[in-house]
Length: 62
Image 1 (cartoon, helix red, strand yellow):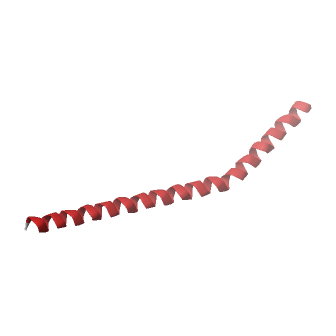
Image 2 (tube, rainbow, N blue to C red; image 1 turned 30 degrees about the vertical axis):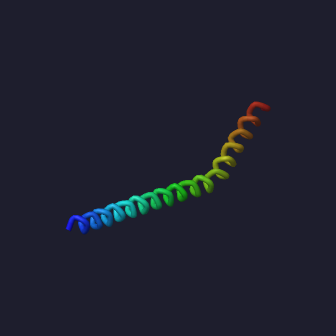
Image 3 (cartoon, helix red, strand yellow; image 1 turned 135 degrees about the vertical axis):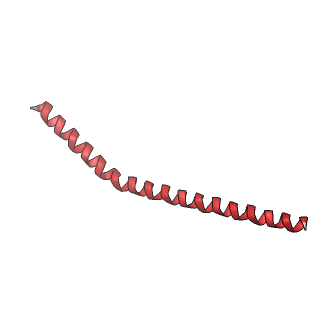
């Protein structure tokens, strides 16, 4: 009986580990999504910064 309970406990622990792994995979996926969103936004932000910089320089020249 006690051996059977240990096997059951082991199975429960394995199930909990699998849930942790799934949560970790979800978090990694969310991180990847955020990373790709940032990568997509980066060129736009760079272009906006360059535009602002050019505008500031042209004002200084005037």
